[in-house]
Image (cartoon, rainbow, N blue to C red; front, top):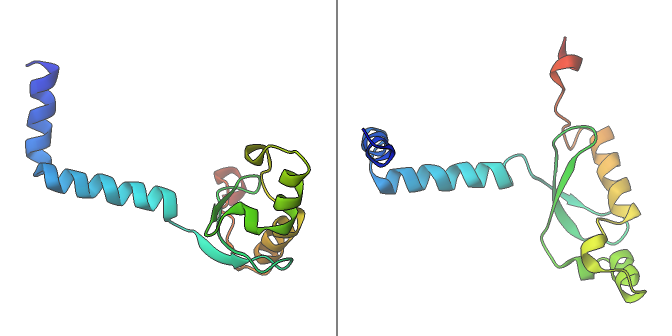
Length: 114
């Protein structure tokens, strides 16, 4: 059986192409949006969506343009490239506060779970 035939056979077993597309879209949504929690920056009031993937890794989805953040806007106006500005200190502090208060959960590592 050729690779193409094997893929077609697997697709037929999995269901219709529409079902496969829906499953793929649902997986993508879960990966990109799953676990995100709304969080308001204590500094400027902008709302973002936040997910902690580990103690070191935080995913932030902006619900507005980053130019609405006064600190980021000031840094860009001073010449810093917008893609190089990851976040502002006040937003980072707001996220750390939310983690401390249990509003944003940090997944436990397997080594820590033992």
